[in-house]
Length: 269
Image 1 (cartoon, rainbow, N blue to C red):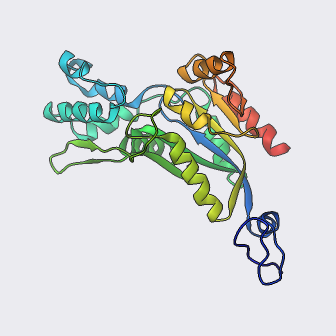
Image 2: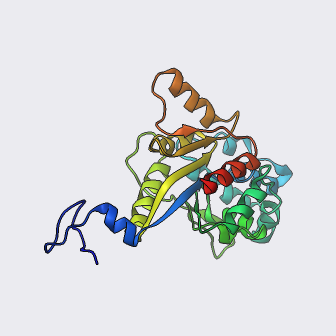
């Protein structure tokens, strides 16, 4: 019926095939939703929310002032060590983290995505950690909505201390040393293409400065969705003023319901 290609449009064994022919036989066409987590899916920063577990719900000045730009994961390792030294254990941390509020409309949005997985793949790329995100998503029964979660690996030591590691190494000068979201996104899209899934549109939903790098990799058919009033929106706006706009469409949001409304339009097209 068709011949395999060794490259786009290359003939093999007298059979002529193109990438388009291969796609028509083998490829599932879907939308990819990419979410940041802190201040996007949830309405707080999970790493600062955990400070509620600390004595008097605050950190010592010396610890709080030890953060160095681009080294957030190392800073959080010190915070977790302090919490462990203060006698804070896993069950207390879990109780605290599962009280964190979702951003307005996000529960409705995730519920809609979960019911429409034929149209959408959905991933999270976050500078939080696996333990926090797992707790929060499972408590709200949203863990099965996500196809994958990319974040810093964390675990509890035998002594009951939460430990966190860098997600990966990379060579991007724009991103913190532990995580380049653009690299994660591009590797995921490439992997899915090899598995027979091609994304007709990528919708990137985020709020922070570390979301700009992946947003600048989006193409003209994609959509960047920065949260209104947050750093990402301001950075995208500044790029337009500097006559160096992003290639994708830009839709600003303040509630998950606005994102949900747009997704409903997409699947009707």
